[in-house]
Length: 341
Image (cartoon, rainbow, N blue to C red; front, side, top):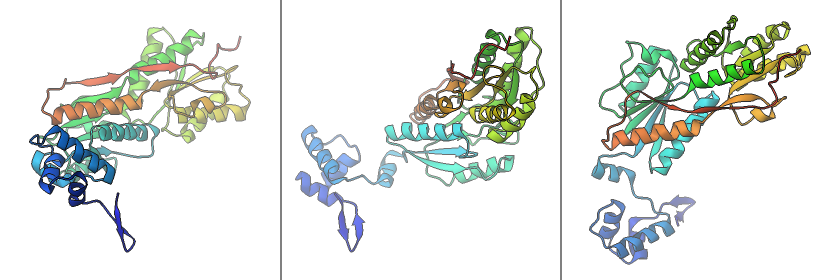
């Protein structure tokens, strides 16, 4: 419990825990700091008193003893994208389960200087390791050097850095989406891509093109856009005006939603005259009209693996080099069908 004086709530003290458990403050301190020179019965009694009173050991004191801050830094470009938010949430959950907190370090700008600035601020933070979610090619340029001596995991990158990387299998997801449309009988598949600066978008585009080429199909021009409905809508207006386009793979679900809107406005029936596949399998995908066929990627698993890898480094364990790819799967709904006869 907490005490309240003049409207100010105060956290329970070590003395209150000692009184409740019937032990000395030194014994409470030993339990709080993880020392093993306390009998199991006494430790259980002290822990029960801590839980009952809501006492939390001082994190700074624990850091002085163990050399650990039990904090993970997360550097990322933006909180606006669905994927980034889901990944951040998963990292926070996995960190919390390991009794770690996270410190978020947003990027000031999507430039090399922005990356350097974030790393500079990183040195001022009391963190044990860092997860980087940059989703951009700039992290792979020679001008950006990641700091040495800090355990680090990169999420969503080309994997060309010396640090371990975790990513969804972007290429396999694009292959599944494209092949699904070809298997339905469409002659080719058009693509509404993500931002040209995005590693994920580049991998999806390359796999889409490779799948068509391997099938001996024509590779249409690419519609370049962003991760938003606006870019999908603009591409969708052109697509809807062309009855020869019968299948579209959109780089993410929001882009696909824009394509669906444009098709509806133009009187193109989906999926009777136009099939659309997205990527992400966002929670709203089954509420689109029609419900959207989409590539499911597990952001939760990406977050869990990133934290597990980072904690292993913090503990001094060897971790495998290269990129750890999280599998994807295609969720087929009502937005895809064979082409019109």
